[in-house]
Amino acid sequence: MIPKGLYFLSLKNIVKSYGMSPVLNRLNANIDKGELVTFIGPSGCGKSTLLRCIAGFTKVDSGEIILDGEIINEKPPHKRETGMVFQNYALFPHLSVANNIGFGLKVRKYPKNEIKKKVEELLDLTQLSGLGSRRIDQLSGGQQQRVALARALSLDPKILLLDEPLSNLDANLRVTMRTEIKRIQKQLELTVIFVTHDQEEAMSISDRVMVIFEGEVVQEGSPIDIYDKPASEFIAGFVGYVNFIEGKIQAIDSQHDLIYVETIMGLFEVYESAKDLVIGDVVKLVVRPEKIVIHPPDATTRNNLFIGQIINSLYTGHLVKYIVKAGGRNFFIEQYNPKKEGIFAVGQKIAIEVSKELHILKERNKSKSLD
Image (cartoon, rainbow, N blue to C red; front, side):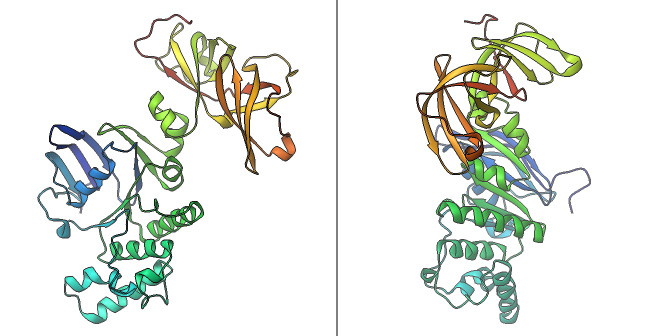
C-alpha cells in the first residue's frame, strides 16, 4: 500500500534519449489511484515512449518510476503489474478470442478452471459474450479492440496503459469505444493512462489531461482547464481550433474581474482575473470558435463587436463552420442551430460579437506597443 499523502504512480525526472536525440527531458508527473489520465501531444513529443517506459518495454536513462510506493525501474515487464493495449492490438491471429484473453493466465500456469472463469468474466465485461470461440479475423475492429482490452485486464493490473488504442477505428466507433473504456474504468475503479494525439478524445474521456511537448509536461489539469485556460499559444492551438486577437491592457477593474483590452478591432471587455497582468501589457485573447456569435451587419455598435465578411462556410447539420475575414485576418467561427439562427452566405458582410468570457495570454518578452 502506498503511504498516506503519496501518489499511486509517480514519474520523477524521467530522461530517455535515442543516441543524441532526447525524447523525454526530466519529465515529472503524478497520478492518483482510480484516475484516468491522458497524455496528449504532437507526434514525436515522447508520449508513447513514456508509456513503454512505465510498462518496462523501454528502459529509462535516468529518473524513477514509482508504482504503489515501489520503484519499478529494474523490474521486467511481466513483474510490473501493468497491462497494456497497443495501437495495433498485437493479438494472436492463430488463437481464438478466449485463448487470446487467457494467454497471460496460461503462461503463468493458472488452473484451467480459473482461466475459464476469468475469461468468461472478461467476455461479459467487454460485451463479447458468446464470441469466445471465434477467430480474430472474424471480428470487427471494435471487437478486436475489446479483446485486446480484455487480455490486458486478465492479470488484474494495478495500472492500465492504452497507447492510442482507438486510432484504427472509424469516427463513430471511436466515440462508442471511448464510452466503453470509461465505463470499464469506473466499474473496476482502474487507474488508467491513455495516450493520444486526438484532443477531442482526450477531452471526452479524461479525469485529467497532461500536455507533453518536447519531452516535458507543459500543462496539466482538467479537460475544461486545459481547453479554457491554456498556458501557452502552443497549447491553445493544439487542443482545439482557436482565434488569437493581439491587444494591450488598457484598464483593469479588479473588483469585477474585468479587463479592458485595446485591439486593432476596437476595445474588448474580458472577464478574467488580473493575475500577473498590469496596464500596458501586450497580450493575446484566446477566442474559441464557439465564443463568437454572428449578427447582421447593422447590429448596434458596442465593445467586443466588429464587422467582417464571410469567405467560406461548411454546413454540417447541427452547426455551420464559417471562415470570416476581418481586420486583415481570418477567423474560424462555429454557429450552432443554423435552422434557427439562419445561414449566412459567402461574401456577406456580418457583425461579429465575441464573448466576454475569454482567456488572456500574456506575451512574453514583447515591447508594450501595439502595432
